[in-house]
Amino acid sequence: MTIRKILVATLGHVDHGKTSLLDKIRQTVVAKGEAGGITQAIGVSIIPIETIQKICGKLMTAMKGKLLVPGLLTIDTPGHAAFTSLRKRGGSLADIAILVVDINEGFKPQTMESIEILKARKVPFVVAANKIDLLSGWHYDQSKLLLENINSLDYNTQGEFEKKMYGLVGQFQEQDLQSERFDRVQDYTKQLAIVPVSAMTGQGIPELLMVLTGLAQKYLEQKLTIEEAGPAKGTILEVKEEKGLGTTIDAIIYNGTLKVNDTLVIGNIGEPIIAKVRALLEPTELEEMREKKSAFKNVREVTAATGVKIAAPGLEKVLAGMPLRSCSGKEEEIKKIKKEINEEIENIVVEDNKETGVIIKADTLGGLEALRTLLTEKKIPFSSASLGKISKKDLSQLETIQSQDERYGVLLGFNVKIPPELEDYIKTKNFKVIIHDVIYQIIVEYEKYVETFKRSIELKELNTLVRPCKFLILKGYVFRQNNPAIVGVEIEIGKIKSGDPVMNGEGRHLTIVKSMKEGQESVTMAEQGKQLAMALDKITVGRQINEGDFLYTDIPEDDFKKLKELKKYLSKMEVDVLKEIVEIKRRENPIWGVG
Image 1 (cartoon, one colour):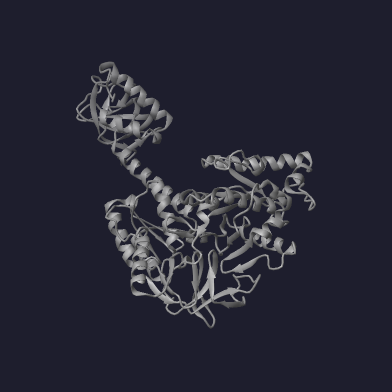
Image 2 (image 1 turned 45 degrees about the vertical axis):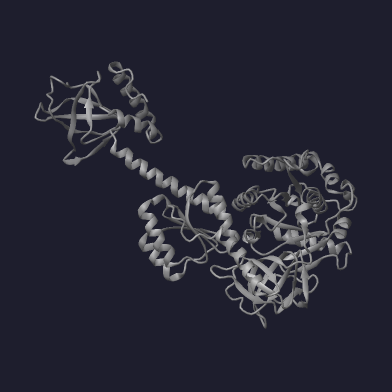
């Protein structure tokens, strides 16, 4: 058993500086004259502990005792959504994460999503409050450490900096997370450490590396223990076409050793993919792995934890985010691994769980898992969870759910595409499809949809109820005394419709509204401010009603109870009339509308 490198993932909103920060760390290493101190592997940069010690210098005296971790392995796959692929059975591939936030902009949608995923995966993280160099009046003295530099700033600049810092602390508080500037943290198990940094100048990078390494050293040591000599376990980061190699996979190996000619068992929808390693490739030192022109070198084997490009026949249908295992190729061994991998995938991919709920799709297994986790936290049920682009089968299932419960007749897609041939079909059928590359945004849009849907249902229900209304019988506008009585009225407050019951100011039921006319036009609804002719059956003007009387809608008790629930849709004046009607009713029956 041995201690492996710490797997570090970077997350954050687009343009907040995730890639720039990693690039600066690499440049810092080179600037320190550490030739060979950093190694590029596929999707990762390997920073040995000796290099970290040199970058941090005297800051490392804060680290008591011997450093056991061999270094950091920073995962820097392109695209903010890459973190959702960084999964392994039972949790995240990343041991710890850096959440990059622009100190000047604060939280953005992808910041929120990153926090949700980190919380769901229970991944500890530190916050890099980036772009401090853009603060007004900020000066950077390379001879000083971060805190010395902050203390030497003028009063106004320090004030602006503290304001921005504690703006971030407040935003974390809103997410139920306690945070503090790294040097003021009292308990790292209860507070997030915020390290001010500049990816542009490199300021704060020694402090960031120190905090990361210190946390991992103290809290993650047991998690970092691996079997170096055993079979490889890994996760697929990307599937790529490489000239002369065909389809290749970029993978992170987090346990064991992978060798040329090993048999690979790779998770898939349906039967796992079996392939034999033809070549293992690493970029030449300090080459940028995201550049396709990068020069690669062949290696015979790689040991955890590292990133590697794998060339093998039959990789065309491999999906990003899938688990990978190596073995000797014996039939019994393959059979056992296939069973384990299938169980892992079946825990996430659900074709139909026989429940009414939204349909969810994602491009990677990790993405699907993250979306499922966040929906479960929000108590939003799902009926199926699958990978890949939207299919006709998904839409057929969507139509069935829509007919059962329109709230859940929605397809939520993370990083997936609608095939062009299905776009018109979706529009014609008026299907609700929400697709985004930010999981947080998908859930926000779905919640907005549900709120709008709920509002439309409640407004429909409100329109079936007898609403609070007070109206005046106008003097000089009696058109017929009875059979039916037809009088001119003015709606003082509220709304009244044909068929609504009417009572007087003593609470005595009088009649129902038979019909209404505004000028020559028949209307079924009249609202505040309108003057119109109203036909009232089975009453006589001069007996039950008189010119100048105020009348009210005679609200049934059941309607009143529902109106209380829908009160948010009533105007203040309608609520006041409703109270007036309740007072009138309770003179006769003190418990009217109670309970």
